[in-house]
Structure formats: C-alpha cells, structure tokens
Amino acid sequence: MRSLCLGFLAAAVTTLAAYPSAAQLPSGGRFGGDGGGLLLNQSVQDELKLTDDQRTKLTEAVQAAREKFHDEYKVAGKDKEKWRELMHKSAGEIHKATAEILNPQQRKRLKEIHYQTGSPALFTHHDVQKELNLTDKQKQDIKEVVEGYDKQSLELRESGEKGRQAFKRRSELRKESLEKIKGLLTDEQKKSWQELTGAPFELKYGRATPNKDDKEPKIEKKEK
Image 1 (cartoon, helix red, strand yellow):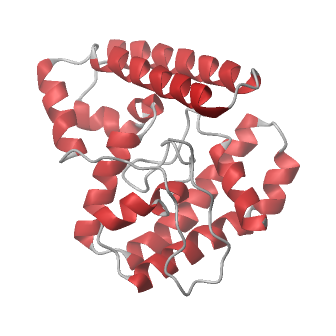
Image 2 (cartoon, rainbow, N blue to C red):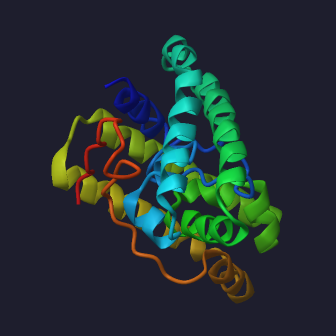
Image 3 (tube, rainbow, N blue to C red):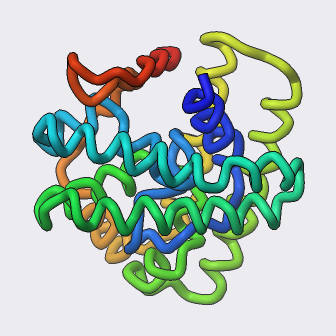
C-alpha cells in the first residue's frame, strides 16, 4: 500500500512545468514527473525487451527513490517549488540506477518513448529547445501554451471529475496543447522532433510487477 501511495504522489505533479533534463531521465510524461511510472509501464518494458532481472531491478530502483523522499513529500504539502525539487531529486536517483540497468540501445529507445508520451512541458526543457534550435519568441509562445495547459489540467483535477470522461478530457487537452506547440515550429524543427521521437510507439496503460515471482503488490491498471 505504501508503494502505491508513493506512485500517486508522483502522478499528482504531472502538470508542473519544471522537470529534470530530458537528456537525463524520462520525465514530464503521463506517469509522473520523475519518470518512474514510465519505466514500470508494462508496454514500455516489453518494447525495451527487458529481462526479468532488469524488470526487478527497475522496480526496486523506482520504489527506493520514491521511498527515500516519502517523508519530505508529506512535509512539502502543496508547495509547488518543494515538489519540483523533490521530483528532481527522485528523478536523479532513478536516472543513476537506470544508467546501470539498461544498455545504450534500451536507453535510447526509452528516451524516444518519453518524447512521444510526454506532456507539453517537454518543450520547455533546455535540451529539447536546444535540439530544436528554438528562437526566443518560440520559447515564450510555448511557455504560454504550457501555462495554459497546466492551468486547465489543474482545474480539471480540482473539478473532481473521474472515470473515462475525465481521462478522455485530459487526453484531449494534452493533444490540443501539443498541436498548438507543433504549430509554432518550422518544417525543419518538426523534422528534428520526428527524429527525436523515433519509431511510433503505442503506449498502453497496464502496469505490472517485474515477474510472476515478485512479492510486491501488483499495481492497479490505469483507465483506458
């Protein structure tokens, strides 16, 4: 139960714009800002062709990182700045472990999946902006889109709406915001973005334990 609580803590801040560097660790996606949720996603693990040993080690690494800062999360309350700092620290811990567990090809593909599944906040990351060679005007325009996305996401969460309809609205909001951002890019920048995202990947929302012998409680599947 404690590990499930930690997973919820990570998911609660997906609308925050300031995440760790995209070059360091997948973040800012739909599974939590520290990237742990994406690493533990069943379809992602299958795409990376992880061994049972890798799956087990990744689960342990993510849980250890979140457990390490669990008490600090509780103290942070609703302080966004503290949440950003803690997510950065947690992501750093997960990144160090991931670098040792995954091979270069797996890390490259994971980063591509991260770009494909991430929130609009990805485009505010320094590394992404550098890769796309964004102008100052584009950075400002993108920042405004992201702020609007964050605001609407928060309003949706605070509305208390749940279930398939809420999930659908969140997905539509993300898609609309990403389309607005891509509309600000030049043809050359769009080409660069396609290169960063790699081959298309279908993200599925089931999350699983490392293998059939794992003793940790299974993580509930997210809504479709």
